[in-house]
Amino acid sequence: MDFFTGIDASAIFFIVIVGLAITTVFKGVKIVPQGMEFPVERFGKYINTLKPGLHLIIPYVDRVAYEVNMRERVMDVPSQEIITKDNAMVTVDGVVFFQVLDAAGSAYEVNNLENATLNLTMTNIRTVMGSMDLDELLSQRDQINNRLLTVVDEATNPWGVKVTRIEIKDISPPRDLVESMARQMKAERDKRANILEAEGFRQAEILKAEGEKQGAILEAEGRREAAYRDAEAREREGEAEAKVTTMVSDAIDKGNVQAVNYFIAQKYVEAFGQIATSRNQKLLIVPMEATSMLGSLAGIAEIAKDAFGKNSGPSSDAGPWDGASDK
Image: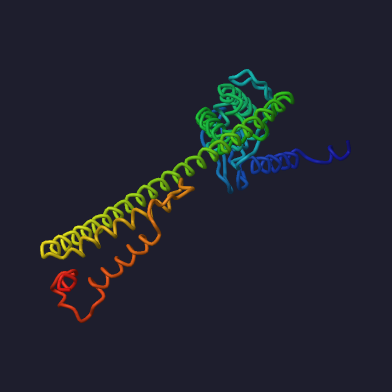
């Protein structure tokens, strides 16, 4: 009591003024950290947004309504059960990355931004994944992420929020469904193996048939070539036979009887040889004397000598039996 009675009214007024000045300075000077933005209200109405740095506002008239984090944030999406298009129950969780681009929009367009973004993401996960079969759900995760990102980002755009990524972390089918899928996968692999094995056998049979076909073609070409050669040989043999016959005929015209004997003896020996070499011939009966046979052979030798063996005979322009006729 003695202290307060000893201070006069002017000193109290001075202390109040100093305190009010200090309070006014603190209310009028605002420092905004990097990565943050402060929407400012004047008498309850939004007027502007303070960017990072030092700012002055009107004390007691303006006030910082919100402190908005402008950095990219990550938020876990809790596990939830989803029924797929083919009535399979799966458990899904994920993670969402988002960033506030408009501090005023995130402050005034939606209440509790993180909760709204989380519920919107969970709802769209059920919608997107519920419209797909289980096989698509397990094999098209990138497509699911892209569809979720498109839908959620479009829905949060009026809030001044940019959803940068949505990732499905885990998809957990029931245990019995996993076992069924494993059996199905094994059956599918066995089926593919059987198909590949059958395809290999088929290809082998095709190649074998092609080889046999080529072999048959080559064999036929060989037979054709052989037939052509045989025909050519027979043609030349016929030409030679015709030439011999012509020569014999010329010799007969000139009165050479030995030429006729030569021709008959040659055919006789050929016929006898064919009889002797026949496969079915077990016993050969010769209806003639051996001396006659030897005599015939000797006669043929003499004819050949007379026809071809004499180098001092007539010129080559004459027939082979002309010399024999001169004897």
